[in-house]
Length: 90
Image (cartoon, rainbow, N blue to C red):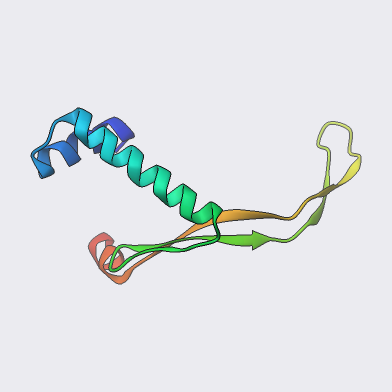
């Protein structure tokens, strides 16, 4: 399922227009991103948890030249599926 198919499904389930469903999905994406950037978690009980976890700095190598370089520490988004979602997939 791609984003457009998801919007159509949301619109059908919620009984709203695709424009309204698009606005809802964009709002969800924006608010999850904003919360993760602020260091917060987004917990949707039964569905899962979105959180930002730190990734340590590490040594890397330029694939073109082979020159060693330092990859800086950063935060990366993670999603942990909840029990209801796991059960639905199995």
